[in-house]
Image 1 (spheres, rainbow, N blue to C red):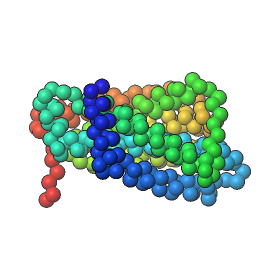
Image 2: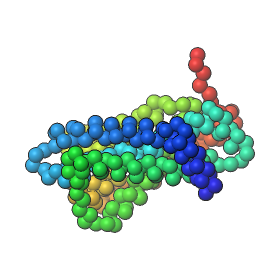
Image 3: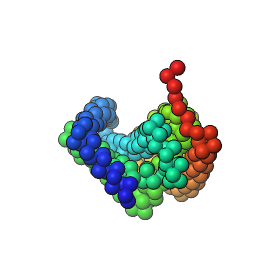
Length: 265
């Protein structure tokens, strides 16, 4: 709680008062929103209700923003901790580095809610109000829990990559950009070629996105609901276990060999 309080206090003083980074970031995300909504407005099928198209767009941007938050709030802060020496001080003092990221959670959740709310507002003003039809609240809760588990594993895997190399690597780019999008995070698997569907279902990213679209919009799924719940839970659990193990190994190597550093030459 103390870490969360000081993180929030420092964030508001630095980003909203002194450096105005909050407003610059908000403007940047607004431009992202326009770039995303433009193709939706131009190329959405005329036979589909506009509110349903807007619902698909909002879910896609929610999933995308969730993974971006998990990616950069973890890897960006870890990279700063490595380069500034904070990580080594924390390890020498015997403090868990996870305390720092628990302190970041209020800022991360605040930004995620702002981003989702802004996309909802832009869609409503520029296109149509997103329409949802929650047929099964239990499935909705299950999809959110599954998504949360995958997000935690996602951030830990990227964190392990940063701890091992000292900076963002190809693992960061592959996991944070390519896999969540190619595995159905932005587009339902039913609209993808069979080969892509097979590859997507081999990752833990496809199942929570599919279940979230189904529970909110009634979107078609390529697997039965029971199979999505079973395989999605299994993949998410294995992914989380692998992520925790890789993070533990990376921290153990740092304690033995010291923190990695990236030179200019």
